[in-house]
Image 1 (tube, rainbow, N blue to C red):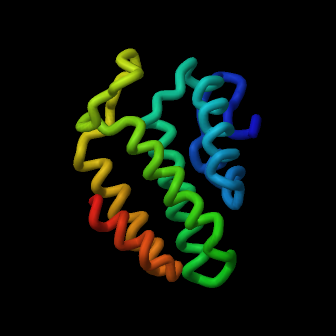
Image 2: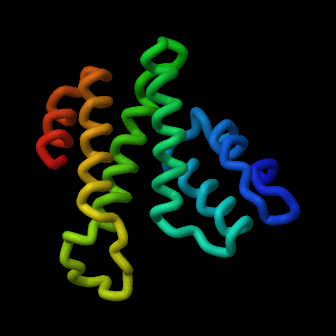
Length: 135
């Protein structure tokens, strides 16, 4: 929340990630965008992806250690890959020519691979196979 951005517009990334830990990814993404806008005046999808990945990794670590269930971590897999799909430079943009596609194939492949491995750990084998094949 508001604690993650100081009055000087500085974004405390660690505080933001701690604040958002455990939230569903849709809510976290909304909070991340708001915090980035307050701190920087903009919220590029690449920055949102970076913060979401950090929260995703913490959530996955907590699930692996048995501190929280896999459902939030699994939900992050869908949100992260959706964000990549919307921004992949290799995708021809049919209807939205104004949206700048900014994620290179290497980033998208890495996110898909991380999500695929995570889904496998969570026992979501068909979805894991799909993500890993796309990576």
